[in-house]
Amino acid sequence: MTYRQLNYLFKRELQTARRTRGIMMMVILMPIIMWGFQIILPLLRLGIAEGGSASIDVQLDETILIDLGMPLMIAIIVASITIIPFVSASFAGEIQNKTMESLLSLPISRHKILQAKFLAGAVLGLISVVINLVCFILYLDITNSIIAPANGWNSIVFSINVPVSLIPALTLTLFLCTLLNLGIGISVASLAKSAETSRQLFSFLMFPLLFFLTINLFTGIPEVMSGTWNSSLPLLLYLIPWEHALAIFQKAMLPNYFSTNDYLLLGNVWFDVIFHMINIFFVIVIVLWLASKLFDREGLLS
Image 1 (spheres, rainbow, N blue to C red):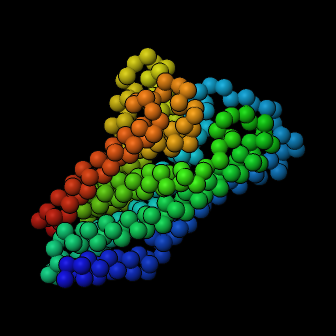
Image 2: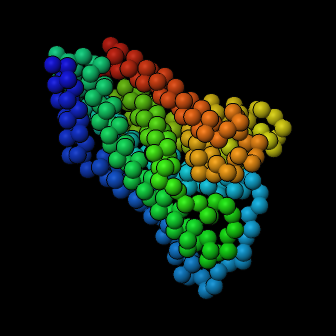
């Protein structure tokens, strides 16, 4: 009976999401639109300009990490914002439309309701992650084969070919970011009384953090900053879980580069990658625990 209840609630959430045009447009089209601009605009500039620009030989360690960090930041931002409409409609939207009251009146525990909503959000998030990652790999391929050679950009970043063996790790990283944002969104939406308020609260909480991470790209990941400053203080930035995602992508895609530098926490690139993933997973557990407490509170509908 428990499985039937969960399956019923799960299908209900997916059907609601499918009927809500804004949710599916955000999940499917947002990654394509954001990456489309990143790919098309440099190609347009190449078409407008007659002849390539002067050759730029990238030597600085920090610049190399920024070259890769900027598209990674876009991937993480996409993973963050695509889930917002679903969370708003599935939680605060149901409270606003009074459908949450009838749902909670069913002989189904709140735990199962929350679990079904989270699973549905995770499925939609995974779809978005796959599209996001495909666009990311396409961006790297076009940049490395067309844009960088035409502009004379010389950097180890512009010779990256993502191996098939690396795709599961990159997919898992983006998926963990999506689950983290989903948990935060559930917590925020459980406090809101309308879908619009939920979106505003989530944006107020998330975008300053993402903006800070974007600015942080100009100084490199914490290990690079620690080496530059001769201080371990920048490592406190890993209290921000999305910082771990940036480090995973950079270390996984440039293992040879990090193996020849002192930018490691545990002395091995892949030990570091596992360490960063464990940290993100640990934060997800905490966030989901908080979300369950907020969803289970008596004043949810008041």
